[in-house]
Length: 401
Image (cartoon, rainbow, N blue to C red; front, side, top):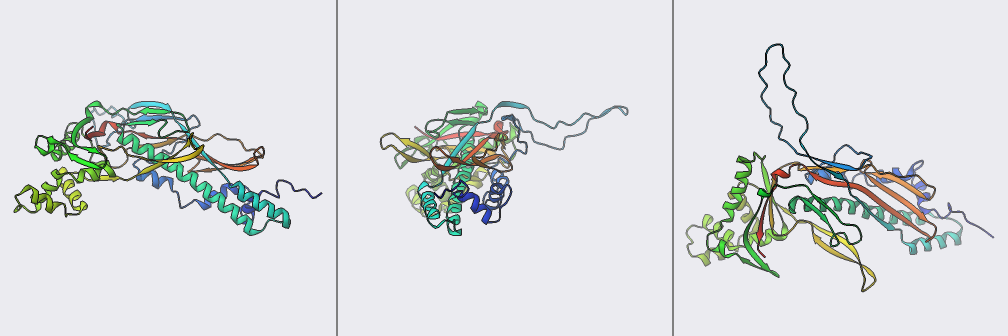
């Protein structure tokens, strides 16, 4: 009886070898395959939360209050005394344990079975077979790494739009455990100024705005001015969700104001609105930015989550807006904090292959499950987006109930 050992059916191992990856080949393959697609430093810097270079074994985070580094004046002392030492760190606001998030994919059992049967029949594994399995591996790991980046992005948008809070619950984490972290935005920075209400897709301008008792442009200007003059906040910008901006830009208040500025000869309110409704949204946005003295960054980000549908007994998918709707947030330009990660702890075992990604922050394991006769690729990250400028986060809730 002809018997095959496990190495004969190790398509991944043979594929790595045939592609020229020897030694710790799994690590080398991941480093090369995903070197350009995911750039952690660039990605997180674009989010306003660059990577913290420290990767501690003890997975805890520190929220240090950021300070503006001006060229402070020297101290006057006598000739024989030393000058005061400049401070280098901010005030420690909060410490806590970094959360861990994991997910995994199973290499198609059907495809693997077909390739195994073919290999058994012809007595060899061909390059075409190796290529099929390596493609499965590539797309599987790509799903995991992309999901990790989206997890961090969701953290970022939730913390910024949800008054400095990250709330992980059954809605956005149905297959995991709840997590809640409050990074402490000052209560004085959180205001409500109702500009509109919404029923289904119908947006109705609030009577206070229509009647002139609420002036949205002045409200936004006052927030920026108070931030600069009273809190000495650095230059900043506004952020809002795409849906919120679409609702805001449709309000007659902004359209009529634009028409008044561009066509002062039009005096009738209805004619002003008819004229302004023909104007591109980008022009209205630029006009608003000039009036409020700060740019508006529109966040168009949707996150997808998986959950088990008890009725159909299947996994279903649902989409969530990453940035909360109905809120405007004024935040400083540039970095708002950093991404802090813990060092993965793992063991090399005969039944798995191990690789690290993102500079040692992400653990990737290919595991052979003998009991279920499947091959699984698992991802594990211990990390959190940690803001350090929450004292300069300012909130306007503009959508009424």
